[in-house]
Image 1 (cartoon, rainbow, N blue to C red):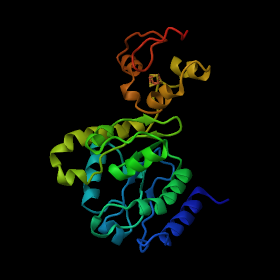
Image 2 (image 1 turned 120 degrees about the vertical axis):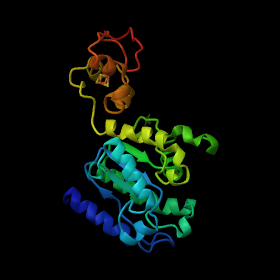
Image 3 (image 1 turned 135 degrees about the vertical axis):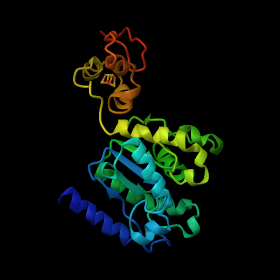
Image 4 (image 1 turned 45 degrees about the vertical axis):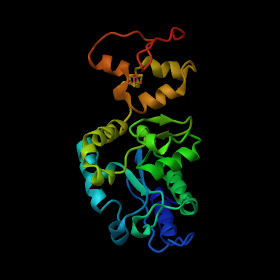
Length: 251
Ligand code: SF4
């Protein structure tokens, strides 16, 4: 048994002692709010993260802090971890066998924290979650199109974001990347209209597909047409779906 914190400490100790692959010297455990709705998953710790045994303390950490601040999200509200727990020499890309050796740790973290939304940062973490959940992996040249899109797989929600380090090389993308990160503040909580919204009643009565609830009511409620009309005090029919279309089968 044991508390969530005790289980977390046990898991961290096991991660730090890991020798499942040749990288295993100073593995870095994830950190943050153990009850977080959002779990950010980066690729691997950088040199400074490795030295200080803290998540995102290097140059990309500064970028992340800026993006979180702009989004109105505090580090204390989220949980952050890595796909590969050890620093990769010369910041090289992770090898498939290293990801395979290490990803069980990530799965254990996900099972323990039970976040509402998984937020992979960058190519490798996103590719890993897509593969694991049977999602089609876009061609590399189109990969950027998955960033900033909330996905419901039928089991989990995934919201891929560009890695903060990408802005160190492409600072001109800051506005676009910041726009994607801003959604994290929406995902921090569920829609405030949930208790009285007919969509919830339809779902509970088995008339509405769960994806509407996951993608809007417990996800991007800010983009829900019903929410937007509600906020402006504009009438809308009960059978209007979150995307604004009408479902005549709902009464
Ligand atoms: S359908 Fe829209 S307004 Fe209703 S609870 Fe869901 S997000 Fe909120």
